[in-house]
Length: 130
Image (tube, rainbow, N blue to C red; front, side):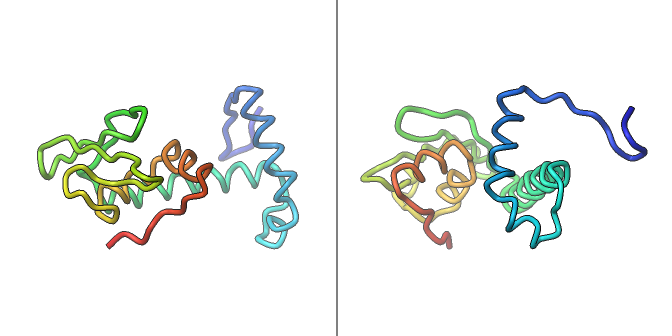
């Protein structure tokens, strides 16, 4: 039975194992931040995801991911009422709309975990978006 103001959530074992692995690797810096339990770590992680979604939704509520392609991501821009392709060119994300690597569409693409992960594996860091 969960404690008052708490709930039980089912998590796939492979995800739980991954979370435990991350927690063990980051345990000491987390202690410095006041997080001293695995439950505290998971709650903090969930809160960061919620906050990231809130920020992205408030800064660019008109953008949404349509899907991934082999060489990039398709984004719906409701403000422009069109679909925008952001593709990887020479290891960088480039917007097909304005042929830029530092527009809001590119910034949004970097906020998509799958895109960021692939570029990170290529050794690329996101540019500062104007």
